[in-house]
Amino acid sequence: MTFKQAFLALALAGGVLSLQAQHRPAPKKTSTKANPAMAASLTRGAVVYKNVCITCHMADGGGVPNMNPPLSKTSYVLGDKAKLAHIVLAGLAEPIEIDGNDYKQHMPAQNYLTDQQIADVLTYVRNNFGNKASAVQVAEVKAVRATLPK
Amino acid sequence: MRSFFPRYLLAVPALAGSLALLASNPNAPTVAPDPDNAGLKLPAGFGALKVAETGGRARHIAVTPQGIIYVKLNKVKDGKGILELHPQANGKATAVSGFGDYGGTGMYEKNGYLYASSDHAVYRYKLDAKGEVTDPTKPELLVRGLKVGSQHESKSIVLDNADNLYVNIGAYANACQEQDRTRGSKGIPNCPILDSAGGIWQFKADKLNQRYPDGIRYATGLRNVVGLDWNPQDNQLFVMQHGRDQLSDNWPQFYTEKQSAQLPAECLYALKKGDNAGWPYLYYDQLQHKKMQGPEYGGDGKKEATGNYIDPAAAYPGHMAPDGLLFYTGTMFPARYRNGAFIAFHGSWNRAPEPQAGYYVVFQPFKDGKPSGQWEVFADNFSGSVEKTASGRADHRPCGLAQGPDGSLYVSDDQKGTIYRIVYNAKK
Image 1 (cartoon, rainbow over the protein chains, first blue to last red):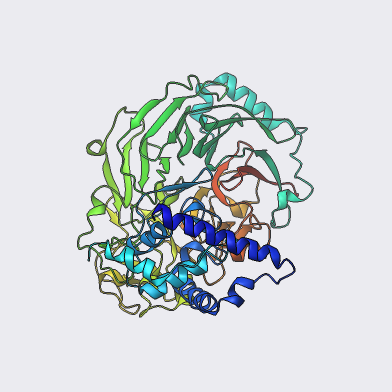
Image 2: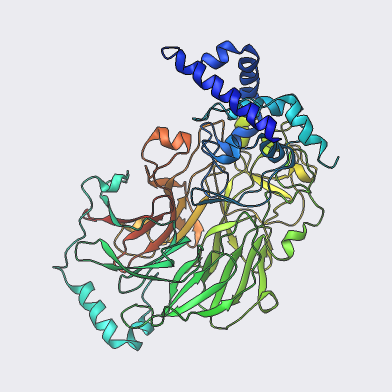
């Protein structure tokens, strides 16, 4: 992300925030109602989550102690989207630590999923389990996949 | 601590005297259970108390003949990997100290030594006549350089009656696939993991600085064993294997989610030197009572396994994660429990989207050193509720088991670090 893009993203985020502030009594799901594409992505992402992710990360996204990390409010999920997409596409072999807890189980690569499925499931994860973050776009996943060995 | 050997008592007259006094004193206070039995559900006549809240990841535990409790922590807490708890008059215990700057699982006491394991080594500490570690800063390093990956790290330990040490070295894989836990990935022929893991290794309990070449691979084809114990009745090693995961995740063409939640069995094996239990090539289907070919090795959910592999001595529902095994030799519990096995099921994760299961201590009746009759849930509700069991968000998860000098059953919990003590107070 260039400085210009970052500035643009910040400005956009600020705009969204102030927009939300103006509509204080608005119902919770304003963003998805206002954004049918995101709502559709969330619906498809829920299906992918149930078919692929739920076994290890569990129905509540809380993971499994010592083994599989939680998906709620972690920098892995809410941070850099390219890094997040990379974890799904290439897997994660190294143990990670979140809030003083170690999670050691190897995450297998899920590169058999389509770019659309990965974008959907990551959008779903970033907007469930107490998370609220921007959608992941197909193009963002595609860009990461292009960097990986075939 | 398992039982008092007469020759041991004779060898330590002072200790024997105090123990005999304890045993023969009819006015000795009976241990009072907590009013809510520590939140556990138990058979009639049994009670439970929370002995201590350690706040650590309490893995295996050992109780000395003097009643001192040693707790192995999975992760070092305040610089300590082993906690020492001293018994109080009310049956509870107080943490007096800690030592050992390494996390791990193994904790076992025998013949005046405390044995402990990290995820790649085994140590021992000399105990004095009071059951206290003589030099906590200078353990003897018995075994080192054991393989450890990012799963099945626990090096559980037990001794036989001939100064042999048995160490679990878990396989650092689910089913020895070319790509671990990856959908459709085939099994590697002649699984290379088995050279140095996926089995039980035997070392000498009193020899220092042993490495792989000093030990022998006692039994192989065991994916991961956390609970293990020496059966004093038939003088044999028994182990509880954690069965493989992800049958339907990785082989959806052969298994439904429901089948994958139930299968494969968590197996109790009676091991003899040289036995092979068949991981990763097979798994045990407790519903069909058959050894089945693993899908990574040409299985399809229907094909039976071939080859010279042992059968389990008993089988339990899938994924419940047996982390503790203890043969009960005490006299506090009613006679039917004597020489039977308690198994601590840590609780499942690999049953989603089906409800999770386990989080309890099971009793398996034995007769003449062999499982005899149906297993039963002995201590339940470690999770806190039926809903918490189903979701897998358990308050407590039973892990280690130990028998106290009076025959109490101690259970550790590696979720919150609670140490439980289960007693029998009813008239026998």
